[in-house]
Length: 84
Image (tube, helix red, strand yellow):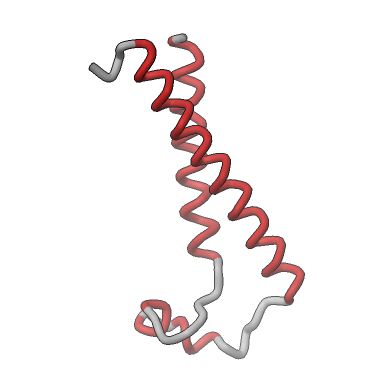
């Protein structure tokens, strides 16, 4: 199970990095931290609806993949005795 655990750890690192980038690519909805850092000033540069929906889909798919990898790593660590 050592090889599977290493693969899942690498996948976790890659998905974590990509998930962070995709979340940062979303446009701010206004009234929150995005306005504090200048997100409200880009309201004239709205992305198209299709691009926003695709970004949402990719983010959700990557988030679900990330969660499955976390659960898989937890189960491997629990049943292999590496967690104790």
